[in-house]
Image 1 (cartoon, helix red, strand yellow):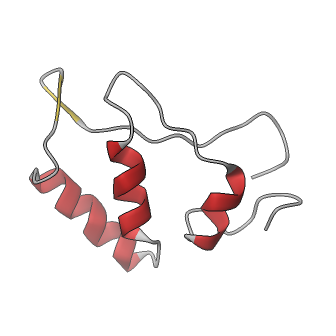
Image 2 (cartoon, helix red, strand yellow):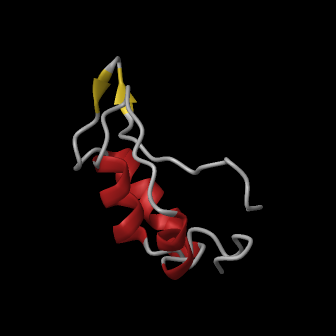
Length: 77
């Protein structure tokens, strides 16, 4: 990511307009893909659960580096 106003955000999955529960199969599928991509799946799932489907959790850019969500953020990692 370049040092701009761009942000990466996370939110819960919606099922028919309602938040999907943490034990929904979609979260297992997301977790499996994150593990395959060598991303800290626990961090991403917690970040997703931090905001409902209508909201957005936007972490500090530095948090994205150590969790492997981002491998390059200009002037950060």
